Length: 509
Image 1 (cartoon, rainbow, N blue to C red):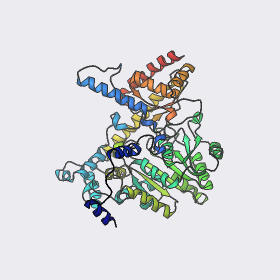
Image 2 (image 1 turned 90 degrees about the vertical axis):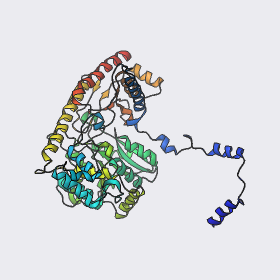
Image 3 (image 1 turned 30 degrees about the vertical axis):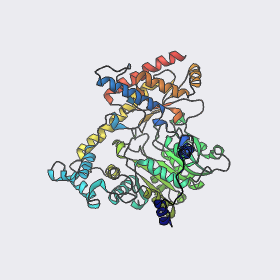
Image 4 (image 1 turned 180 degrees about the vertical axis):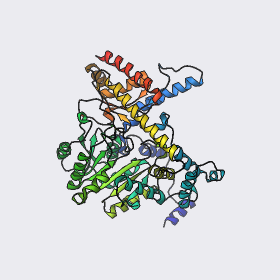
């Protein structure tokens, strides 16, 4: 039938083409514009890369143009500091040598013949080449390379003291965000489905819910208790959701983003019991599990470990746990690697998740390998072990010092209160915004903390994210900053903030 239609058109027997006027009319009515795209796309927000970053990029371009012309910066500062996002290598953190050597050998196996790598690097490259003879250039299994998934499974078992992590329950993905989004696509059918998200939260979750047409159900972290979760707050979730909405999942970000806390074991047990009892899927976003700065006071426990140790009383729990190569001490954000483990979920649902992964064929192979390396680094006795430990411990100890420096500096500012950053890469200070500044923000049709952060950028070149982009308790104002600038530049970083804050408060007080 179709062949006859096309043949007829080719012979000229099809309908004559519309007149130019008609074509113009058709174009006018069918061209895509911001008014006729999917409204959920218009409504979605991702504050980490919003208007402030766009302004910063404009300013940075002017600075670079001045440098090329041999001129000084057109601003009162020499550079833009992107402290808005956990992107360590963009702020001069060096990559782990072993990881990059393995990646180099995989990308160009001829290097293995030149005796430039330690023996354990060569062996690791060969282990991946045994499964992927042409390196990272070919599609992989949609769940990821079997070799890398086995490495992840062994890591999880070693971390949690178990022996039953199934590589088939693992999905390697383009960062943790991709598998989180895919699982949300499986769960959320429309506005009748709600997902409990922390306030403040990482905007991936609110943005994805908006895209999918789902309903966010907020629960508030307790700032005065170092951003912990209270069971009273979770138990009151029915009051927070609109009528007719079914609660499908609970998102817990631990260690916290943007808040920098690490949950204590007792509250984690209560969360697991709560989800199992109420048949709510537990989303455990654990991408900062290596960024623990006070393990004696606030150690990391995975939700999987807690679930396993609670035993049969929570056997009905459905758990999705996430990890990523972008964070920790390796900070390989550009490699876009991560994994999700799916536990207690019906096999048919896992097959649907596999189908979603298959739609994009597979995650990028370099990210899969980096995920394997993250979970299976050099061991004692390996040729690369001592250098690996030196690099790892150097980065983590520096992050711990920087976390303390930033929090202490923020707490010295007038009207600023910042909880300790015991983990992750962020501080999330609360700022007291003067009434005149609130009025100025209303006049400019922006949130008061957005005004503060935009002014901070234009006066200092420092990029942070307003708390309103993460959601926050009504009447409070915050901003999120990383503590990723190099340690030898941290004094300049905190001094810029302090000088700005003093002037800004004086202006509006």
